[in-house]
Amino acid sequence: MDNGLFRKVYRVVARIPQGKVATYGQIALQLRSGPVGARFNISPRTVGWALHANKNPEKVPCHRVVNKDGRVAPSYVFGGPHEQRNRLLSEGVTFIDDTHVDLKEHLWNS
Image 1 (tube, rainbow, N blue to C red):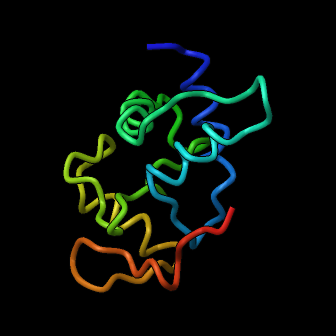
Image 2 (spheres, rainbow, N blue to C red):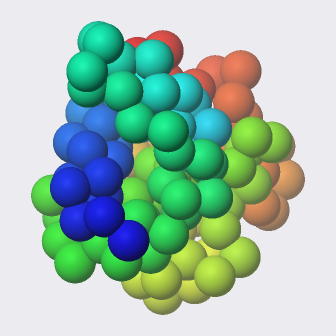
């Protein structure tokens, strides 16, 4: 996979503020709709692969990325879904059930 593309994903994810979340699709759309010459044809799944390969979770807060329905990752690479949920809760993110973030309240408007 293109390492430069992963770096682009990491730059977008690094901008998600504490207490907010973004979706994989939202990040892919940002990269597809950038300035001419800087656009990447990327899918939400590729965003997920990039985040799974993240080597610096303190700099790239991949725990702030959820699926289109607000569900945390069932195979969150840094300790499983409970760890992702706990990290989000510690930032003030609320959930509508055990696995789904309240997107109405916490979706990042980039």
